Length: 87
Image (cartoon, rainbow, N blue to C red):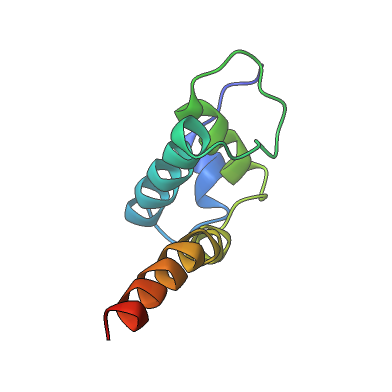
């Protein structure tokens, strides 16, 4: 496994803050959301896999935002159904 550096990741994101936010959200998806990694999982921690995805140019903030919207749609639909039944 090659070492992931901040410089490798910054080629694909605008700044360090965005890198931290993106890698945190993606690592959380990998650890708890049952999301499949876009790079080979070499017995690494979710944070390392997230950084490797970013360094490879496979992960973007738009990808994360779209995934969050899709995941929340069933929740919103269930909430609307309950609201309609209450009225």
